[in-house]
Amino acid sequence: MRYKDKDVIVTGAASGIGKATAIRLAVEGARIICADIDEQGAVATAENLSGTGHYGLGFDGADAASCREMIAAAVARSGKLDMLCNIAGVMDWGPLHRFSEEQFDRVVRINLNSLYYLAKAAMPHLLATRGNIVNMSSAAGLVGIAYNSAYCASKAGVLAMTKSLAIEFASQGVRVNAICPTGVKTPMTGTLDWPDDMDPALLMRNASKMGDMIDPEDVAAAVAFLGSTDARTISGISFPVDGAQTAG
Ligand SMILES: NC(=O)c1ccc[n+]([C@@H]2O[C@H](COP(=O)([O-])OP(=O)(O)OC[C@H]3O[C@@H](n4cnc5c(N)ncnc54)[C@H](O)[C@@H]3O)[C@@H](O)[C@H]2O)c1
Image (cartoon, rainbow, N blue to C red; front, side, top):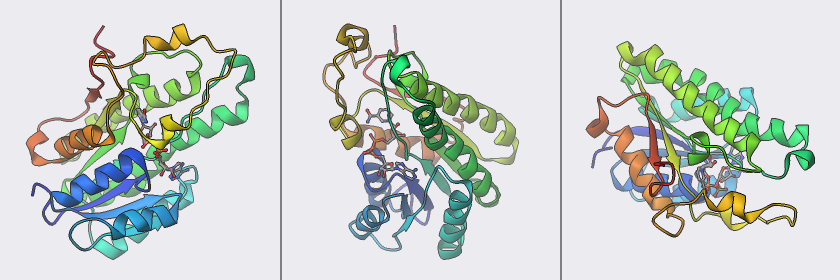
């Protein structure tokens, strides 16, 4: 019960890694605010968590005002905030010549700008509790991946922001860490199509060396560790959960 009496916001909680994280932290005693653009999905996750005091909220991570309003609504209900898990994100890929400016902007806005909006709104509350942030980056933030320049840029940006905020707030007791998973079995990867003009050989190197893709629960376990007092001296790290994908 590492999260007994802890109030935690989990974005992206309607699906995949966010949902698995909400489930894991609730089992460890947390009260979870499940936040997602899919409000119904967020509410459904909250309703099915173990324990009490959970609820779901809709918000759009691409919109600064919506991020501010979500954090304010969450703290208005829980009275405090101990941890922010920034997990909501999108993946979009394609050869450079077919990838539009609109696609690039959308990926960066949701995966990177959003984390800035949310950290800014949450920080006063995290300073009050000496809380922490766990940001969801990716192995794609550590290495380049063909056809994924927008996604990789957004996830590398998450790592740079994580390190900068970790240094900025270390002396005030707020930790900021990031997780870099390899391919995870979620709707995000389950719905990817593979256009004919993409070379599979360029993508094959970007996989876990342990074989298959990993489960969302494997990533949730890493979030639970980094956000807990077990990791109280760990801040500013990019934590691979990748079956040695990025080891060499
Ligand atoms: N699945 C993988 O292989 C993998 C690997 C590394 C990192 N990640 C990262 O993990 C995170 C979760 O991915 P997942 O695999 O669970 O995907 P998923 O598609 O299952 O879940 C993503 C969630 O984010 C929500 N979301 C999307 N846009 C939003 C917005 N504008 N505002 C608020 N919520 C929004 C979706 O509604 C969804 O519930 C993402 O940041 C992703 O980039 C995923």
